[in-house]
Length: 118
Image (cartoon, rainbow, N blue to C red; front, side, top):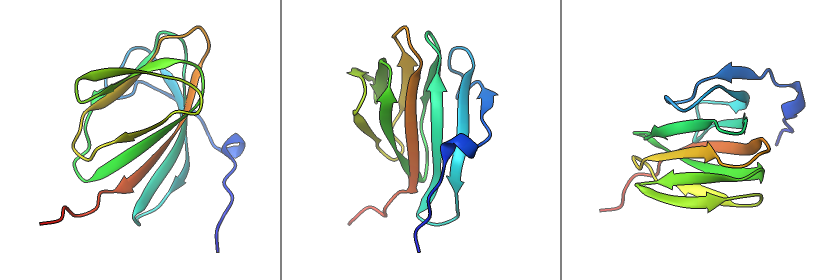
């Protein structure tokens, strides 16, 4: 049976993410040991960022809820805004910076990477 997770009841932490600029607010709203590893709700104040990083055995999807920013994907910079969905390749580098004047709010969905096909 499915479940409903309410981010409003999650405990937000003030962290510096992957060596990024400034401190951001993030809450883990779901975590498990299956193919779906976690779901986070994160907010970047203006001028802050999630530093560029890579994951070894997983891939992530970012869903932008509000605000404006720049996503770095394997050395390329792409402007992002509300409604954008960004897939981060397994072992690919990625980072996100708030370039706007409002908080940049997004959901991170982290899954185990599929085994490569021969």
